Image (tube, rainbow, N blue to C red; front, side, top):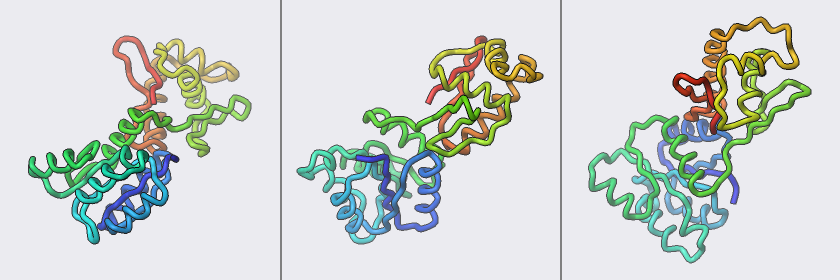
Length: 225
């Protein structure tokens, strides 16, 4: 099974928006506006996750979700499903979860929040996080093969963080690491905060909804996907 996500949504603009955010986060996204056609497509080629609208032509979302959970194929029976709907009543959310949905979002929702929930569900399911590659020779950092547009200082900071995910770095440590291989950089420890702010903006564009650089109060920063 791949990192492909199937978005089953009969509102074309919303479906396209969700697909754009999913692709920006490193996933492959397919869109289907009909429930029956979506069930056939998912059975033919199981994706990593399904984003499923409740109100659909052909076959409604609840019936589709129940059909997946009852399928003899274990890949389909255990397929993660995020249900989205304009229905906001508690009974509707309960019906969606009882039908087998892993999560439930009410419209209107933030596409970034949806992507964050998708990542959380796939992480729990054991799927890999987006790939971050650091090329020290070219002084380039890419996410899923797409290079980030970084200044020399931003590269130095992000490279240091990305090489040691989960480790907390003080501003002074990041300053020293940023100067490695480029001693001419004129950066102060307080300026690190500004560079981190710019890095977060660029990372957010590449990985919507992911807080990749976390502030650790009183200590510094940590890289965590």
